[in-house]
Length: 310
View (cartoon, rainbow, N blue to C red):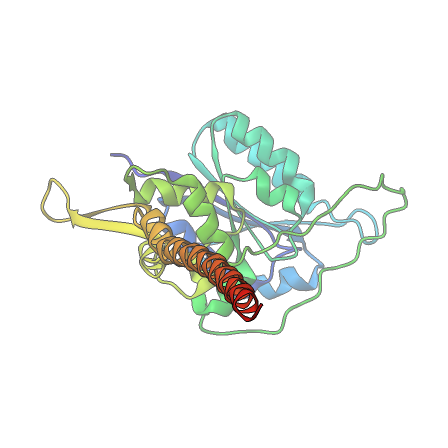
């Protein structure tokens, strides 16, 4: 099977150089890095931080001059190159490294042509961009989880003064889902039948922007699922090659039984309480009847005594 060809396009004005190792390591998992380029303004403080490490990672600079004060054309250069790469059909997967939602339309266009888009950006990334990608990885969360060994001070993103008043739109920032929310999402994907763990993982990664098990301190999706055996049944065995393991999961089947078993004593106690009440009511009625008969007998004796005296 041919290895997938990858193009990594970094928005250098928007992304810190401290993520360089993390970006490369993540891309290596998907295939062979054919293009590794960084775009940005030559005068940008953030880009200047990248210059010292670009040779180390084999990053090709695509730096731009600013034709007007505070106006960067790096975004346009990245978009033009992405379309050129698309038409040349030399890669299978685009890694778009940015937190800028302006690239959302570019992502849709690349996907329309059958390309896979892996987005990478910080947690400030608008949800619109993250949702547009096939997968989205949150750099700062992974970095804090230990994906990188060294840290450097973050450089604030340059503020661009736009003279045109934009139309107000909802610019919702991507949110990292809680572990409980991910467990609930997996349970909703599964049915009663066994499902392959790898297939379930693909569904979760594509449907939940920013999902990564390392966000929750797990080393793999398998470890994540096994940590929640109170919710899932896990079946692990050797595959047909007797080398690799095949893991299947499903929602736990004994949940309903457990619920029924928990309800049974309650029903029994209700029945016992009902029987006790009936017995008490019957006893009360019997007691009333005995008292009534006793009173009638006493009255009869008194009448007979009066007659004898007369």
